[in-house]
Every structure is written in C-alpha cells, then in structure tokens.
Image (tube, rainbow, N blue to C red; front, side, top):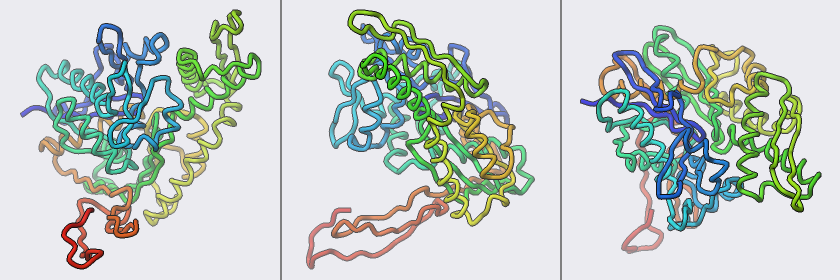
Length: 432
C-alpha cells in the first residue's frame, strides 16, 4: 500500500508533505526548497520547466511563462477578464466558454497547466520516498465553488494521481495546528490569505473532532492583488514621467511584477525599500530607468481597499457560526500574505488578540493534507473531520429561479430531497 501524499496546490506556490510514522514531513524539491512556485514555462524545443527553473526565466520568456493559473480554474472565460488583462501570456476562449492558455497555437486548459505543477509535486514526493506515489489529498480554498473543485480533481487525475479527497485549506491548517492539542476543547479562527485567495473559517476542536462551524472568503483576493497595486503605482509613475505605459510590454510587465513582489516582501521587515529597474524601456531610442522609493505607509495606503476587504468575510463567518470575537481562543494565520504587518494588525484589532505564532504559514496546509491522507489510509486514528458546504446548493427551475436545497455552512456529507413537477403536462424530459 503506497502512501497518500498531501498537496497544497497554491496560486503562487505549492507544497507537498507526507506522514512518516505519525509525523508529517514537508518534502523539499530537487532545488532544495520546501515550497515550489506554481509556474510552468514552455521553452524552445518543446521542453517544459516547472517551479523555480520556470520562475528564473520568466522575464526573458514572459509570453510562455504561466503563473497564477489557479485563478482560471473552473471559471468561464467571461468571469476572468480582469485576470487576463493582468498576465503577459495569452488566454483564449475555448470550448464551452472556458479560458485556455495559448502557447504557439496549442490551447491548454487551466487543469492541464495545474497538472504539470502537480506532476512536479508528485515527483518530489517519489524521489524522497523512493517509491511510486499514486494517491493524494489536494487542498482548495474553502470558498471554491463545485466547478473549481472538480477542475482541481481533474488536474490531479491528469497528473496521474487518484485524488482521495479534496480538503479546504483552512480546515487542513486547523488539522495541522490541532493534532497535538486534541485533548483540549477550543474554538479557533483560521485566517488564510494566500497568493490568490482569501478564506476565513471558524472551527471547534475537541476530543479529536475538528468541526467547521462556518466559512467565508473571497476567491479573488490575495498576494497577487497586493503586488498589483505596486505594479500599477510604478507604471503610473513612469507614465507620468515618460508618457509610456509599461504594462503594455510583456517583458517590462514581468519585471514590474517581480520588483513589486520583492518590494512587498521587503516592506514586511523594513519600513522603506528602493525599487530600481535599470533599462526598463527605451523611450524615443533613449534607455530609461525606473527608480522609486516605496515606504510601508505608502504601500498600506495603496493597498488599503484590499486590507479592508478582509474584514467583511470575518464578520459574516463569525455571525454564521453564532459567535463573537471573544469566543475565539486562537487565531491562526495561514498563507504568505499574512506576513504583511497591516494584515496582522487588522487581525489583532478585529479579534482582540495576537495571532498564534505556532505554525509555518507556507507549509501548514500541506501538512494538514498529509494528516488527512493518514486518516484515509488508517495511519491516523481518533481524528474526525466535519466540514461544511461554503456556498448554498440548489437547482434552477422554470424562469431561471434558483431553488435552494442545501444552505451554505451545512455540515457535509448531507442529503436533501425535494419533489419538482414538470412545467407542462405530459412533458417527456426535463433538463437539470
């Protein structure tokens, strides 16, 4: 019986873990890193690079370096117009109004691109374990819709993995956090702000039972958006000076993206950073440089809308769980974007307590997925996971009216039946 690995398939970075005995182990990739950029590059000669090697050549190959593909998973082409405008690679409309990545005329589905990242994670685990891996638990944002979950499962299957379970990221994080505290009764909030998505889940732990009380979030809010406010600011500054929009040039856009991400990360530990991009663009044949100082205060001002957008889901999740902030014993921060000081301040102010420092925000989700893998294979005993449906489910009846069958935040598995009649007498068939 092979091992079931746990994979955190992230918007910007992915991570894989496995249970060794009863201890979860995060596995480093062939570059020696414990997380792998979720980036795929197509290079001349039909070769593909995944992870760090793909990220390293992004600036010189911007049209064929695919990042943040998770934002396209399970969405229609019309739903992702904002995302398409932000990436230097080409996205076309495919069959059934789905977005496809166009590489030299070959159209790839988001699932196929994600599968390439998953294959890298699978191989990372196989190299470490010295045996073939065929089964995995893969995590998704709690607020993912059914279509987005199905797309993730499909990506796993394309990568040659049997997906034993799709687990919500905050739920996985709570498993990793609470496994050694299973004798205590506590109420926890998991605040998960990743590269592309934001989730908040409220859970009750006790006696080995992990029960999700409510979940909320925003599947289009994450670190990428924080990068984008810096990209837009830099581009507007250059536009003011030189009357040229750097966002129109794929290579310049990719350089802006990397500089923005670097500045954002630096501003988590210092209060000011210099962004220096020599030879960013020739204007009228004269090479131009872009040099700006960005302070933490300015960054917080630029990103204020994004920071405030985290509040509403927290309020809704608490009220859905029937709790107030004083009921919460611990707040766990997950995802790299929770390193932003303004986000930590917001969480501390809202919940009235400092967040727990006990978990690694980059790895905790993969660790939780590996633990769930252990539960499924029987290696982990006395752990029960009760999750909820993040969105209400129903069917559409005549006239486009949605009839709700299952409300959001219903504990799963669940079943519900209702009898519907046909719109006309003697109707031979119905479409659901």
